[in-house]
Image 1: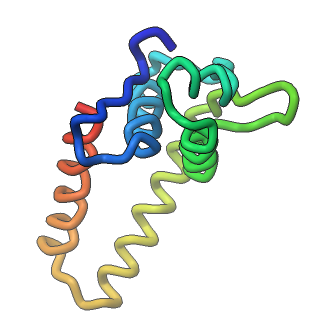
Image 2: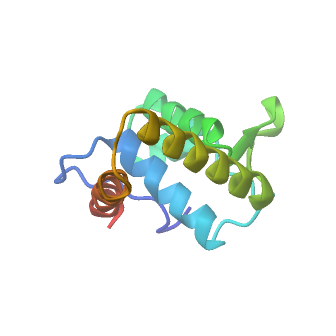
Image 3: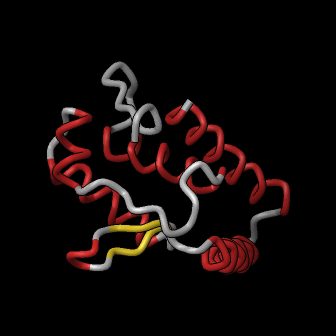
Length: 125
């Protein structure tokens, strides 16, 4: 993971979020292609100087997002991107339905997404 994942203690974002965003971006960009085995939770925690639970939580969030799969003793590997695209489409559809049900205009709904994307960009930047 040389250089792919870093934790900056000088930013407001918690380390778990920084790890999650760094790995997510590397997966989305293809830097970590499908099938790539991630380091163990303990090894990455030691490399980054964070608690094992911090890395484990980041890995769980990535798994919930469909970006990685944990295969017990075989470790954690990057998921096929087909799965990711389907999950993103499903999440976008769910958000659009919720925003509509809550009476948000298209502009307000998109503004919420843009604000969150800006926040995430600041975290991983």
